[in-house]
Amino acid sequence: MSNNEKPDPAKSAAEAEAAGKLRNKALRLLTTREHSREELMRKLAQAKVRRARNDAKAPPPAKDDISRLIDDLVAQGWQSDDRYAEAIVRRLTGQASRRFIEDKLAQTGIKKDVAQLALEALKQDEIEVAKALWERRYGNVATDDKERQKQIRFLLSRGFHLGDAFKIVPRIPSPTPAPEAANADGTPTEPVVQDSQRTPRTGMQRSAWGSKSGSKSGSGSTFSRGSKKSKESSTSTSSKIFRRTPD
Picture (tube, rainbow, N blue to C red):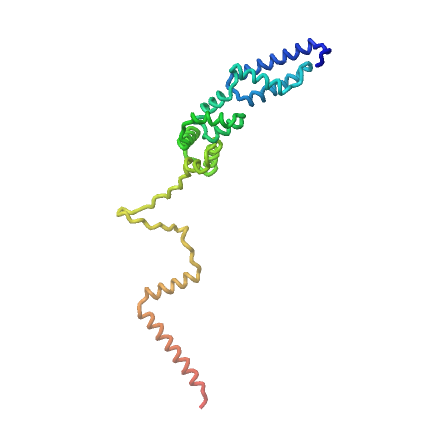
């Protein structure tokens, strides 16, 4: 603005009103919970865009305005990335792995040195935390592979390693075989074959079985009589043939 240009009182009043609303929005957010600088800047920018869309008189959003406002809030102690990092570590201790908490801090724009300083206060056994989370969420052994994979994915979503998740989530128990029946003396009983399970014999098999049974059950005289009759039949046939021969 040049020296000859006179300031517009209406514009100045609108800008002052917009800055006041933006500051009030920031204070409401900070009194609800701790925010990182980047998180607060993103929310204030979204709020300013919505207000500019709804109010035609509102000035367009400017990132410099929001940045200056946050600098002012930092100087007054309203906003602190150190406090925010410490709050995140406290809230997630016992709820996730160290790697998960570290990623969370990085996603919210916390610088590495600030994050490492806050993580120094983190004292937890990763395996014990994972076991406690699994017991609190499930507590029972999975009944099938699908359920077990779901339990493993839950631990992975909290930042725990795959190998640790496989060790913590119990395996599905293998089915126990039915106990074998035993006699009074402890020896196993032989299975009883039902009539419906017997293989039916054909006519030829029954005939062969009958002839075998007859041979085994009959006396030796029956066999001798049969042999004698065969010999007599053979002798008579030979004599008949001999008689037909001419002199």
